[in-house]
Length: 401
Image (cartoon, rainbow, N blue to C red):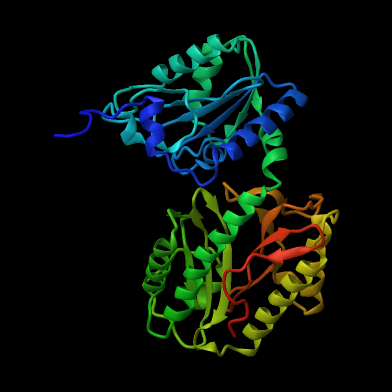
């Protein structure tokens, strides 16, 4: 037999298997920027937490895809980052995706073999002692999703340290996408477009929502989606006005309004797009009015977007368009940043939310009209704020009626 009998965690072995969506220099630049901001905000280190289904921040700083247990990237104010993880099983580090990260210093434990977080904490303690962090002011990214047993164990094990959420510090860096990120998100939109195309072609009278969902998943996986955000929303007919519903076995009927909302994850980045249209191409007069108004609201919003504009004003503009069409009571103006996670800056929800748009921001724009027993009108696209205005990152045609 050729090869080593067991996989090795050594960098020399991991490096030869490593595949990254970006050059290592891109990640090193992110770490440097975070270190600059954490110094300004008075942190001794940032703790970037991730776990299954919540891996976005880990992917951003380390490209590590945690699919089992807890993982933590410790970024000190000075020096190199360290990855602490229990995303290992069978005692085989290479079986646990450690070869995906560019971070050389990895401290690991075997998740199935551990009965609690004690071993994980002991690995953290080693790093804290080495980096003089036992009494530090430590900012946590991902605290909202961190399991209570881990948070409690951290506070008990490091009583002289100060733990606080550092999501604002983190978002100062992630809100503006680099040129490499923007290019990758363009590619992600094409993956989403493959899903929308499959939805449009397969959504025919007599076909169930589950069948359409299956075609969407197949098309996006074939185009390069490594994961798909669930639930994948495919809903037609009377429930289409409720938007985010899981598919059912109900056969579609001609004239049904259909709502399709999909978010593929491509090389660690997620985009969020949606389309609505009448099955068979012909809908009721009320349905067409809803669709036309939603599309107009989106078009006018995109014309208004540019650096220095308050996102609240853009949302108010879409709200005004709906009101002028007599649909104000059915209107929801929503937008949210996307990137390595689905909800990033700018978050454009709520009348009192002030977000000044900047060049390099990328977000989903989804002004929508929802009418019970009729359907939803929304053309959700991924928008890039440019130096002079806004660009729709291409995915699929917008008017489907």
